[in-house]
Length: 200
Image (cartoon, rainbow, N blue to C red; front, side, top):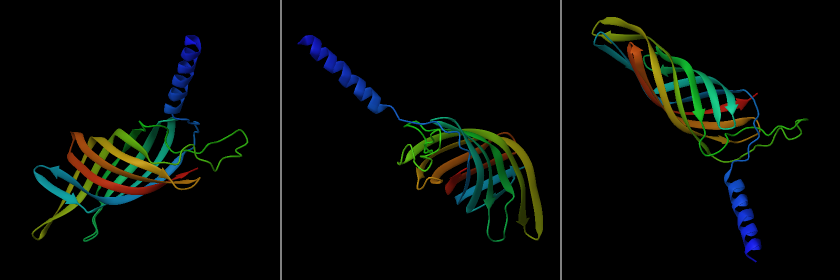
């Protein structure tokens, strides 16, 4: 009796452990993304500052490293509609970690018979940390004069966000992003992005 009870307990624990693990098929599909949103970028050179807002724009390519981690190569620019300006930019690499399971991806078999299926169809939160090169060629008007504020810096990037798949080739992404200079010209940006990524 006790032996049967112990066996049943062990089987139950194994089933619970299996249920708690994400069931992921690791596929190395590249994906391309584009997003826009609200934010502000600033640069300061020799105590002269300028900012560009309220829009931001981002392009990126993304490659899976494992079932819960991806690497992004990205370019982000500030956008000021009137007068038009887009002189502050951040280009770099960011690693994303999906701590609550696998990121949205296609489930691919040997003959790709189920290429339009997803391993998960739920919101997938992520955290990100990155670095890169920031650049600024921002025009600021002071009275009747126009000053060009230029500089470069290495920056650190931190973000939190979430993905949600809506088809076999498309997912939505929202994220809150903070970029701040570490070495070089004082630069920074804070933005909320909403965009999409396509699976190639």
